[in-house]
Length: 439
Image 1: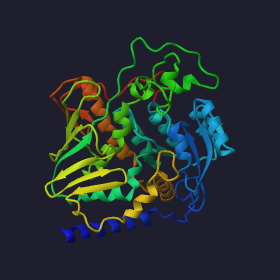
Image 2: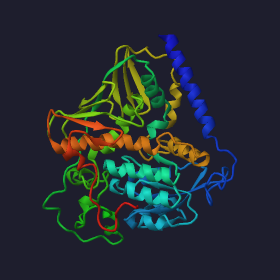
Image 3: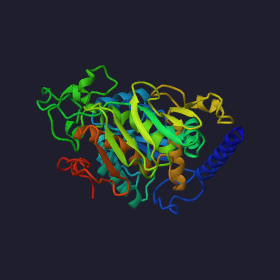
Image 4: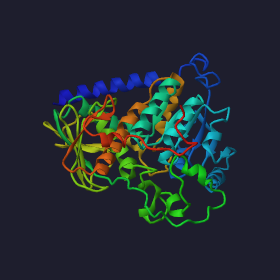
């Protein structure tokens, strides 16, 4: 077994070295690379950021030295003003990302606004000739996610999903170890269950005056028009009644499931070798918006959302040789000494830190930057992000349909249910006039 593990480590290191070689910027002009007006391989990448909430402020810290932030945007000018004051920066400031995307010196844009804007902003950025880093979940419905993939391919853009565990060495090694048979045949994967989204309250929330500096029309974007209420508008990290956070309502998000499962289930996808595919069956075990949903891959591996606590950003992979738990930036095995010759534990240290720290996503952003220069696919390419978000979206659909115990059969090629017309109706969502997805 030790010999097998060492062989896997050698293969992993070889792949890592090849990936590093591919990602080293080549000194070729941007015009030759098809980036007319874009950065040459030895030039800084000029970036804009859409969304100055908790995540946007954190990502300001994670832009590598090879990049230069030149523009920020948020529908709440109080947030942009606070960030400009904090950094004493000379950035262009916008309250509408459609205006930011017109800035001529930009090469790329980071989209980390509210989830219901991710795809709309991402497609517009691709059409503007910009490379895109879009935060998770990539999309709040399956149809939108596929449209962003199409746009990235049509306009030949480098689109990275913000699931940064894809760049962390411990996660990469562990997922590839499972994928390549290191723990034997995988019998089952156990994951934490996270709650889903709910319909907006029929009676709505009490209307309040729109604060000065808030572009409420832009914030609502493609979602239905509703009166302003501070609880709806609040950030998750603010001290609010969590029952009224925007990220809990289906018009804006897929709930905690989309926010957190997009990391953990992305690790499952990686370990299952399903980056361009996905599960084929979904089954609601318990009713309600937070009900447990299990799903199964075509190879028979079942993923059970049965845990109330545990590896929130990964899962427990039960193989016939070993049990391996994968979480952010770490993995453990049972038996404990099963893996020998894995990555140096010190590699994990550079990614430790809290949200907003200086390093948590910098490697992932650097991978995106490298691929902007080489035109290669990044570690969390848009197709990967779409497939992982699709699982979250289908979990939400299973909960909406409420058919406890019944199997929903999914065709990951056609991206349709084969036995649920009602489920297929929920693969897309209506959009407000003027905010339709760009053709």
